[in-house]
Image (tube, rainbow, N blue to C red; front, side, top):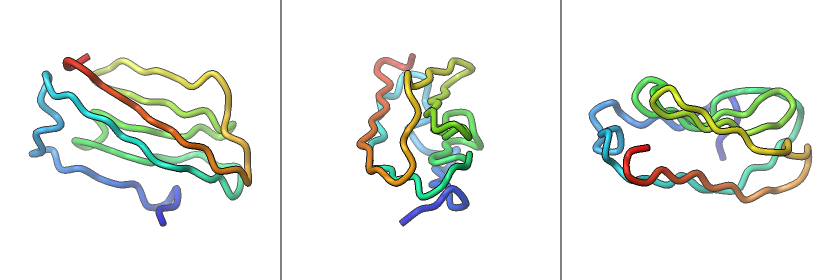
Length: 88
């Protein structure tokens, strides 16, 4: 089990960081309390999945960010997936 204090780091040497790499991050998230933090970090933060204090997921890659439309509820399991196809 990861908490907001235990981000999942992926090495900068990983093939996932190539500009043309396709990748998917998915999992179940349950917020136990309000709070913000990094869930997944690749290449020292070049690509990341973070959670804002109001429960909004933010996926960032190469200076571009996408935000979820709604925040995750405290105490409720939610399935999330982030996909990057064709390097963008």
